[in-house]
Length: 204
Image (cartoon, rainbow, N blue to C red):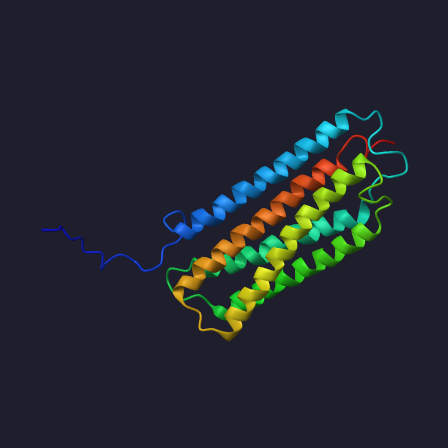
């Protein structure tokens, strides 16, 4: 005779590491982090083989990227406020506040992408101009793909929050979307430091 376990009292939705979907997103972030780590390693490997880095006259513009970084960092604040609504144990999440803060985050993300497009248009070198141009454009390109994808996910969740119905399981999706957004923000902060804090870029 088979033994049976009563699971009727278990919650239908869980957050954090008990959720299989959480492990899927964390696994994705780990893989993508390794990709960025390999690219950073390639950057310093290529740098070690060059006597002058970057080539004279090809310093990447700094002002707009610095402003753009601030915009991206600021976007983590409204995303955090979205997640905080899903953490409410004393009441149901305020969908109006979630929509508002996710909309603010998405707008900031869109502004970041516009700023990124202008940054790339101001580059004084092409991806095939030299080895420095190749690795810098790859770093920008890889992160731009991640940022564009994440902004697109924000738009999809905005549509869900406005159209509904919003079920409890969707709150987990919102939290995981925020986790990936934090990754997009943090990864660019690191890549920005690699590109713009390089002693060759900061030379007098």
